[in-house]
Amino acid sequence: LDYHGVPIVASNMDTIGTMEMARALDAFELSTALHKHYAPDDLVAFFGALERKSAAFYSMGITSADEEKFGRVMAAAGGSGDDPAIRFVCIDVANGYTESFVRFVAKIRERYPKLVIMAGNVVTGEMTEELILSGADIVKVGIGPGSVCTTRTMTGVGYPQLSAIIE
Image 1 (tube, rainbow, N blue to C red):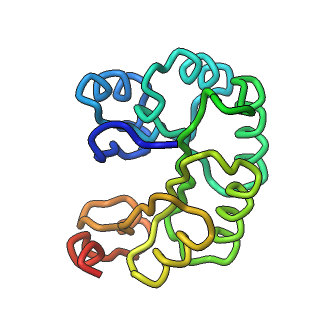
Image 2: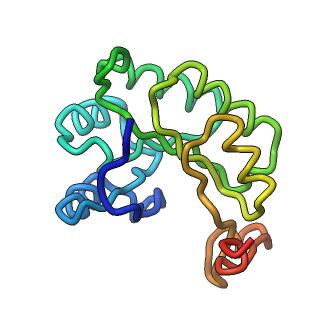
């Protein structure tokens, strides 16, 4: 599947990655990674009505509950065949430097070969390459990039965004 639009994606943070934001940004051919807390029925209805499929990414973590919810939503939304309702997925963790994350990306790629998978978060070229080799089409770059970022303030871990992009 091809991405259609301007390659700018609003974050899947709770107050940013909303269905309302996706609808508003879609008018400008921008995209939104939805936050992870929507109910399955709401996701099925939203993606079923979405005309430009690259307007929104379904976001999930890597727990078994995340995987099970995604499977239910995909099945209810008509997730198989050549024209699935959900075509773009964001596999999101605060720190993408774990074997379990890489394995999860590979498992989703194997199970859903036609999805466009965005995966992250990482800050080095080596891990970007690892995720691409594991099946990611798009890599989210950035871990706690700003001084007021929740990841940085809660965990004390962060890497400046410009440095990560240059890397």
